[in-house]
Image (cartoon, rainbow, N blue to C red; front, side, top):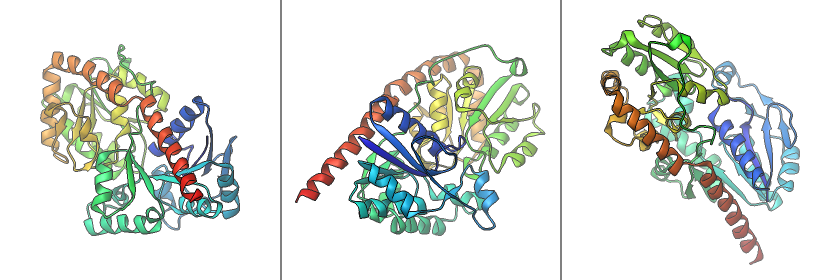
Length: 380
């Protein structure tokens, strides 16, 4: 099977969609499939390259989120699409729309996935809670791209439910992004800078919807604030703000961008993982953390799929409520034996429910079924 993945950003490591696409490509290739990519960015074998679009006025803000738009080019896209047995788009922007219309012109089956929540866009300009704008964005995405798709892959049941709520009529396949097998239960001695401290970590983009500000305030309110070292593993537009806010903690906040391959080593010496996001289609950072043997404490936001990973109420707190989060942090500090027991349970849960092998099998079947259905319809 020859699969073409279409997404604006494929080689930006701070973007979760890029990470998912890179892993999907690699795992499908391990199974003997050919995979090429249509994207902007760096040249690489098997990649159809598109030029960067510089967004007027907001280009710096867009890039700070780990994103750059690609400029559609029908000639390049037609070449890419004609090579493929199936096309899979992973974003709802002009480049992906170009791919869908090229697939229609050239008689090639295609599927799409829903990876970009409207909140991901609007929190950056402090409008992530303005419901009329969020609803409008769902409607625009539907009319612009998803009304032209038969099947949409959703990384979580939560986002599939949101699409149904917003009157999307597509067939929806709920298939997780899965967890990279490099993330497994591991513990090691802490680096010198963390020794004697209770290390709390959150990984992911430092942006408005992720609500790392709630975590900073929870550490401030904790009974054990003097013993806690908070590390935000990521980068993004809110970095300077969070560093300033966290500088007055008893142990000033640390921020650092980690290569994906280095996160396991960080998790192995950490004591607790906190996920404060208000809006999250799945929550890859959280998944990787609990697969590595970290107990998570997760915001119970109804716009986030991440609460599905909590094995009990000890791993949930009221979204946006730093006092409730502080209480949950204090509980896990005070109950070390329970925490160590649950570390093993979470790692086991990850391995059983979200293995990448199971995910790739589902994606593979989705593609093959769509190709077969397309051939059946074409023959009638």
